Amino acid sequence: MKDSSADSSAGEAAECAPPVAPENGFDEAFTVRSYETGLTDHATLPTLCNYMQEAAGLSAESLGWGIRRLMDGGLTWMLSRLCVRIARRVPAGGRLVVRTWPSGTKGRLVATRCFLGIGDGGEEVMRAHSEWLYVDIRAQRIAKLPESFAGLVPEGTPEFDLGDIGGKFAKLPEVTSAAEIGVRRSDLDLNGHVNNVHYVEWMLEAAPEDAGEPVEMDIVFRAAAKAGDRLESECFREGGRTLHLIRRKTDGLVLASAAMRW
Image (cartoon, rainbow, N blue to C red; front, side, top):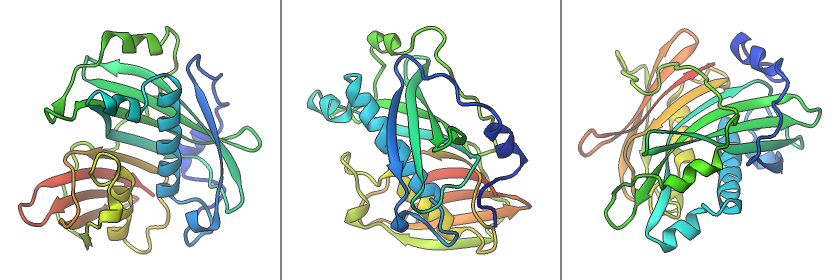
């Protein structure tokens, strides 16, 4: 079980000094509560994802692109992909700052956002790259990003490329472990869909018990689950990597796919 260090790929990231705060960077401080830790008494991967989600929302709001303001105009943000690399574990009572900033676009449909977790001593705790869709709620379809969005990403804004560990096109040769999930009303977010962090929790529920703690994740959100859905969380293990799918049991539709390194 790792606590203050991770595998070599994550360790390399830890040795890099955090970059200078971008022009549109936003910092939010967190203290790890005991109920946000797991068996090792350190912040879990879902906890870190919750921190990033909170920081992203506050950052977007400060820039005039917050979800509540968008919803007044019939629009919203939806997370489509999240890549995370953990360099150090933060124990219960430990503190970290999550720094986030809009980092670019992919065409006119996808906005990207980066995250950096910084420990008390200025060391890197984690880094992440995310992709977001700008969605027309009434039409239930992806909308083009307004041209003004480009102004949030001035020239020289840093962008993290964490590579591809196989989450986007994850296919399971076989299912080596699984868990059945029932979606509760308490799992839903402001959009009326399951909050993205629950998918991470459900994937971890199906992971092998002896796997330890993930140090890297690439998760893609494909379709939304709703209250009352019955889901199957499937996992395939190959060495230090696991592949994950979450399917809706009624029709087999894949709602999310991911790869994790441990």
